[in-house]
Amino acid sequence: MTIGPQTVSGSPALTGSSAGMGRVVEVLAPAAAEAMVKPGFAWHEVLGRARAIAPEAFGDAGMLNLGYGDASGKPAWGWAGTPRGFVTPLDGSTIYSLPMLDLETANLLLRGAKASQPAWGALPLSERVLRVRACIEQMQQHRIALASLLMWEIGKPMRLALADVDRSISGVAWYCEHAEEQLRGREPLGLISNIASWNYPLSVMMHAMLVQALAGNSVIGKTPTDGGGACLAVCCALAARQGIPISLVSGSGGVLSAALVRGAEVDCLSFVGGRSNGRDIAASLVNHNKRYMLEMEGLNAYGIWEFSDFAGLSAQIRKGFEYAKQRCTAYPRFVVQRKLFARFLDAYLRAASQLRYGHPAMVRQAGDELPEYDFGPLINAQKARHLREVVSQALAGGAVPMFDGSATCAGLVPGGEAGAAYLGPTALLDVPRSSELYHAEPFGPVDSFVVVDTTEQLIAEMNVSNGCLVSSLACDDAKLAHKLSLDLRSFKFGHNTLRSRGDREEMFGGMGQSWKGCFVGGSLLTRAVTTGADDETLPGNFVTHSRLPGGAR
Image (cartoon, rainbow, N blue to C red; front, side, top):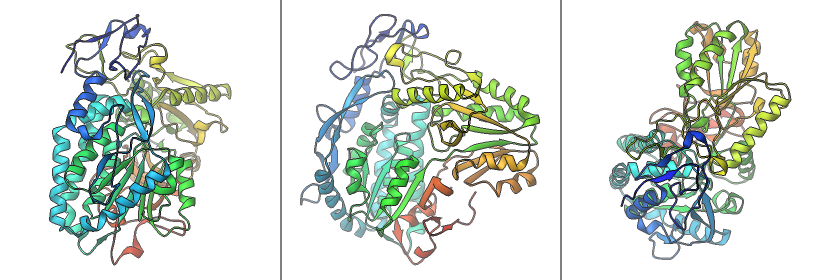
């Protein structure tokens, strides 16, 4: 049911949270005067649609856990655990509770998930394909509802939220089409455990779990604590209805890792997250004989050397800001030949000045379309505060401010504490080596520029993080670009173009400290979660060796 618009102006007003599940906030920003949450997209309406699609996935306070907790062999929703309030980055209100489990309950559900695999793996592949297809057809039917959840949970503007939904659906559909050729002569590993970050709940985590299940495995996933849980719960409910052996559990990573990472029932671990947690997980797997894919971030760099198409580069720079660069394949570091820096800066400032960010559900009038922002808030206020502090420290250490779009790029942004998670695009020149921004991915809309004079300096500054996922070089000379790319420690390389994680047949991995374990994408993903005659030659970045697949980059 659609209710009237909720006005957001200089006086206290509701910003889309339902009574009892949110809080009243005061919006003070002049840009947001006389604005409102678009009717139909207030949180209680979005949650209402989710409950209507998958009523079994929600309790009174929020979502539930899904798992196999008894001898019936059937999944069930329950295990409310200890409620933990989840705060939306859109306006800082608490919109539901996560059902945080203890280790004992997690181990119970892990054993049940393991026990569910043999019957599923014994089904003909054609039957598994039918059931997975039925799940993604239901996801397609509810794509607007799923994208609306992502908008409120992780702050994505509707366009980007829909892209996450659609990439998940189309990617799984591709694997269904190629399942017979990819899985011929291979057997499932057993139980696959999934721990992934919050930024792509569907196109990364849900996509992976459905492909793993298609290959005959049972799967268990940990709800990302920072966002995406409700959307994943709806999708997992759609999968469970088709008999796909999928479990979804919530809890602290520190508590549940004993089960989801080191548990004897786990035959393979798929992890997407930061280097700190990834290193800890990699160390804990040294004495465990199980497959793993650990995707961690690196500081991806874009180099500019002997280049002339700055209009084309400007378009890439703007596109690179999508979702506030909160993705592992973002490019926050630009390494520029000194003689080209003025032209580069002109191209960068043209792109940056066109950026717009704001509350993705806020409009001036009820009949307005949802705004077409490049990005919304960061994932939470703590992250925004941290980046502000890091930028301030870099400036105090001698960095030169080149762009600050906090005011000029702002659209409709809540004021006061309600808008604490919003951060405008920022660029700095000559960040000191002592700064976090010099060697680590900021995971936000903060770029750094480095000026170099030789190709040796170019390579050194692009490789500063000891391995990354992607890198690019803007260079008019294709032969020179190829020669320089051979020294870049990235899995993917782009000549005059951005690179991304990719979809369908495209392979994905990382070099150095950005990746551990099997590479994925295309047939590499199904090989990683199955066993066959060629297991000894699985491409990946392992403790003892690295093996690149043919056609990589």
